[in-house]
Structures are given as structure tokens and as C-alpha cells.
Length: 455
Image (tube, rainbow, N blue to C red):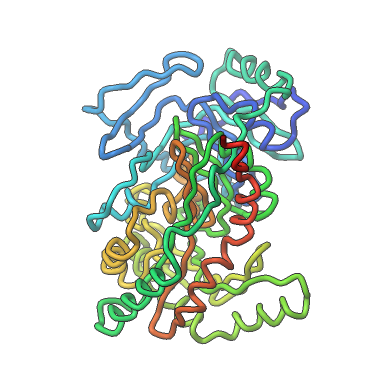
């Protein structure tokens, strides 16, 4: 299938629009609209040839019949999204060149191993995309396997329409607020400590939900959120009345050429400060934290084990340990593990078996997920799942959906948390939740309607 990409129709876009946000805004009615920042290799994909979605325990598949028109197909013969060409590209950098794009929620992923509650919104979506926009050489280019240029002409018309029509304006009808009180968080924290002392687990990623009632399109405010966070694994996806906006800094798995895979778990956080000296102190404190190093290495060991199931014997390596990466709001401790996939392993099979990521569950993973289900009190939905892509050759890139906002109908949700170990302090862990999302939360709450506007 790799050679299929070589026959794509490729043309520079005939439009004055340059930002991903503007392009997404004009294409907002396209079925299967997805944006991935992909470490400064941005793509916008739409109009999948076919797609699968899973919602409320029902699997559906759809095929494109006309431009932006789809029909539901019989699920007795499920689309095979798992066949990849064995030939690998010679590219040194992974980027999207046509293939499969979508997301897997935490609920769907965890439910492979333990019984967890399912959020009513879409649990996974995976589409086959051969029509997309790609940004390179400081220009947007259109790609499609439609050789008669019909799709290009229709998209060009859309992109050159006046932008006077505003997106359905997004607003909150109430402030986005934590579902738990501080006391409820501490009660859950104390219960985690009891499980650790009893030997059930070594670490639990305890998270809390921030909720609000909202109206309008989440895409309306995407640009402000992306500019605030500058996240390398930002993205956006819209499926009917469900929107997912990622501001994630975390890579889950990158599938590189020649069957090489890489994961970069984040575990360990300290806040940023405007004062350079204070910011450096915060960074040094994280770098020297024995508690965060212990927490980080637990997850490294867990992921090494996850990868080793599908890796060539002896190929799993920890290539970086306890590196400090600085983002707009926080410093993070990041490690890196690489491996070589066995020749007979399918990348999607490997991805699904490794989800949910160890950095957002705990160790041991299955018991951690059981405890998370018991204590958190609501399904995570897309949060802590994964958004990404596979090329037709099996290369690809999938993030961890942290620092992400999901909107289903009029319900908006954002989560934050951290790894709890025996050395954790309840007050510090509670504060870490806010350190991670306070800037996003503050920005969201500027879009709250006043009582007079609501009335």
C-alpha cells in the first residue's frame, strides 16, 4: 500500500488561509474532520473512505457514497484496518502520508482488561483517510487519491468562501469546576495509600474531573488553547455531537521505519514561574526529586514489560531517563524507551494491547485500573486514551490524551491528576492537579456567559 501514496494527487492549496484553525473553521462540516499537530508536522484530514466507531457498546461502520455523504454498512464483515504493507519507508521522520486516523478512549482501552463504566459519547473512532491537507515548506498542500480533482475543487470552493460567518460561538453556562471537593480528593488519596500499604499496588494515577455545561462549538476556542499550551501532540476531532480537543505534551508510542518503536512516558511535574530564578529552582527541584524519580522508574519498568511482549528479544532499551522538559505551564520529568517490533506483529494489535498507557494507570496496571474504577466515580471518556494515526506502511504516532477537553452534547469535561505512591503527600498531589491545568481552566472560564446573557 505504500506505493499507493506515490500516486496521490498533490497540489498547493489555492487559498489565502494559513492557520490550521482557519482551515478547520472553513471545513467544520466535513465528515470525520481531524487535526493533528504531530510535532510540527500538521495535518488536517476529512472525508474518510470508510470508518468504524464504537458508542454505547455498539459498533458501527460507514462507507462514503458521495462527497460528504455516508451510509451505514453491515457489521457482519468488519473493515480490516489492520493490514499494512510490509515494505517500510526510507523516511527518517514519521509523518502522515495517508492511512488510518482516530482515537481510542480510556474507557474502551481499559475495558479490554477490566470492567469499567462507559461514557455515553463515542468510545473509539478509526477512519481510512486518503484525502488530507499537509503543511510543509511553509505552505498547505492538498493530497487525495481522487485523480479527477473533484474533491480538490470542492474543498477549494469551501476554503475561499468569505469567513464572515462565525462558528457556533462557544460559551460556558457555568464555571468549569472540580466535581470533587478537596475533602473528597483527600479521601480517595487516603484510600489509595491503604491499597499501597496492603500490597495491592505500587502506584495509582488518581485523577479528578472538572466539569461545566457549555454551548456552541469547542473548535471556536481551539486556537486560543493551542497558543496557550504550545503542545507538541495537540489535535482536534469531531464526530456528530462529540468534540475532542487535545493540548497534550505526551507521546504514547511512535511507530518508526524498520519496525522501531518509541515511547516517552511523563511522570513528575513542577510548576513554571515567570521569574527566571524561581523557575530554575522549580526545575532543579524536580530534577533532584527522589520521589519523582522513583515514580518515573516504576512506569518505565511497566512500559518496558508492555513493549517486551511484542518486541524482538533483547531490543528493549531505556535510552533516556529522568530528562526534564519544560512546557508553557509546567516542567515534566520524561524518560524514553525504544524497541524493535517482531516481524509478525501488527502495529494496531500492539497499540491496543499497550493501551491504556502505564503513565496514566499505575503499577501493576490491571489492579491499578480496578482501583481507578472504584475511586474516581465517573468514566474518564477520551481522557487518558490516545489520538493519532497509522500510515499504510505501519508507521505512525499516538499521543496520551492528557491536558485535553471533551464535549459531548452540552457537557464539557477536563481531567487532571498524578501518580500516587507511598511517598506522596496529599496536599502536594492535590495542588499538582491545578498546576497542570490551571492556565487552561482560567482561559476556559473567561468564556462563561453572564447571568443576563443566559437569561
